[in-house]
Amino acid sequence: MCGIIGIASDKSVSSNIINSLKRLEYRGYDSAGLATLNNNLIIEKKCSGRVEQLEKIIFESPVKGNIGIGHVRWATHGIPNTVNAHPHSSEIVSVVHNGIIENSDELKKKLEKEGVKFKSQTDTEVITFLITKALESSDPLDSVFLTLEKLKGSFALGILFKNHNNIIIGARRGSPLAVGYAKNENYLGSDSYALKSMTNKISYLDDGDVCVLNKDHIEFYNQKKTKINKKVLVLSDDARSISKGDYKNFMSKEIFEQPITIKNCMNEYIDKIRNQINLYDFPIQPDKIDKITLIACGTAYHSCLVAKYWFEEVTDLDVEVDIASEFRYRNIKFKKNNLYIFVSQSGETADTAAALELCKQNNAKTCSIVNVVESSIARLSDWVLPIHAGPEIGVASTKAFLGQLLVLYILILKISKIRGDVSEKEIIKKIDDLKKIPDALNQVLKIEDKIQVIAKDFVNAKGTMYLGRGLSYPIALEGALKLKELSYLHAEGYPAGEMKHGPLALIEDGLPVVVLAPNDKYFEKTISNMQEVIARGGKILLITDKHDEVISENLRFKLEIPFINYLLTPFIITVPLQLLAYHVASLKKCDIDKPRNLAKSVTVE
Ligand code: F6R
Image 1 (tube, rainbow, N blue to C red):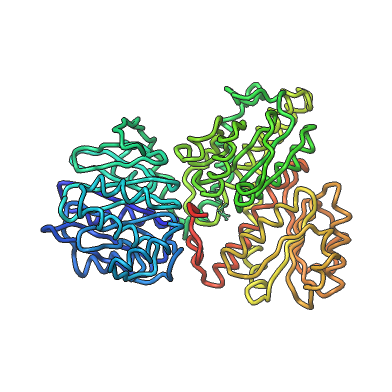
Image 2 (image 1 turned 60 degrees about the vertical axis):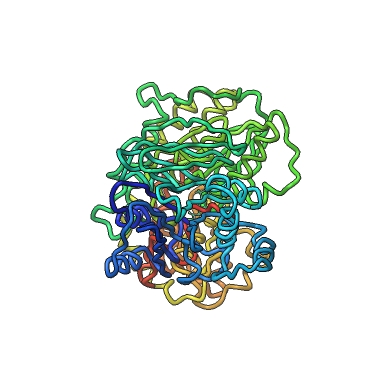
């Protein structure tokens, strides 16, 4: 993970570096730092903790310089402290890095034998000293190319050179890197979001590319050191959606934005007058596909699990779901008629991108469902379906999850229609039902105050379990993931029918257990599993869209949610779980938008 920024300008850069680092904090927030060049000296300021802390340091002791680099860190090598924070500088070179250098130990040993004294425990410092050594006999660009040849792993780099005080060199392998253009100022950044407050003109580096930028000009080279040109993209202005508005934090804003997110996404893909799905330019003939593999990580993986149940309900297709970090190392037998679908909010997740790369190397058909349309995953896939959720800033994914579900559902309907698995009449009915989701979400958001009360039961709990069957099983996994990442409380999601095969032993008097029992074909079975938990002392929070009183006995709490049709329950039943995780974390005074140890964009393996 980590976020990097570089600015070459005709005016002082430190405050713009700080502002960009604030926008990059979603990529890492355990330490921060910057370096500028002033009077031919490298000035470095770093600290553990947030960018706010760095800002205070700079306020107390201002840093001059019209050229500089900055970094927010998500620790990989070495604990998050000031010494390990980036930039890592020698007398003549300063480096910021996002990624992992896999052969850093080996390189470090060699450099130590040559007399280099390392200050930090990071892998990045080897890059600093490799470039420093190379500069003894080459110019900055050659020294970077010579260094890159020695590195194994992934990186996006920003490099300053003491004796070449007007340039920053950037390099990319694996980790994303963009440049931005403005008058008398040019930029380097981990993503366009970091640069958006300064420019909307962006180019992306591809793997192996290197760039040299000064305040007036940017040059690009490919890995063979041949000069290349880059397309300049003009980004749309969605700055408004990047503010918290009246909400306490981004996560609550993003939860409450979900009815509108779903509406916006639906407008992109559904012709509401003709009740038709607008998915054009399929580069793949869906009737020639006989298997689908869905690949993702974390929350996005849960959306894929939901999609598997949907695919099986409405098509005859064979469907598999894989976690990207596993898929990329498995011995996959790629088949001509298999479609590989990648789901990712950021479009930059390293494992998902590597799994996609593997598919491309094997000439497999690929499609991606992403929120960030300019992302690496979107650019690499044959076909892209954006989820149009707008920027998601809270580290815990909420509105992007519902957006992923919606695009997957629409895609499934389209594929099933082309294949003739579902009749036109049924599709129209299903589209009509989809249109009811925003209202149902608005209704479910109104039960927030009840959830706030329920959350108190979880604050001091030893742990908790989330149980569901069928479509509610992946939602149980998602509910548990939200609770653990936000409130640091141990939570497990389980298929309710699997409890008796071991996990029932965890149930003890007073343990809070969340049971998802919508009115579907599993309802009675789930209720029986719930009774087994009650019999062992479990304190149940039941969430259901079956509104009758009989099942209310022996429950600690029951939340009733609206019903549209059983296939759409995942959209509705997810929201109380997001709110529960949110309120437990608030009561525990956890940092909602930036949970400990995590980052929004996971660009390392
Ligand atoms: C959890 C969460 C993560 C992400 C995962 C994949 O709330 O946000 O589990 O879902 O890191 O990220 P993307 O979707 O960007 O590929």
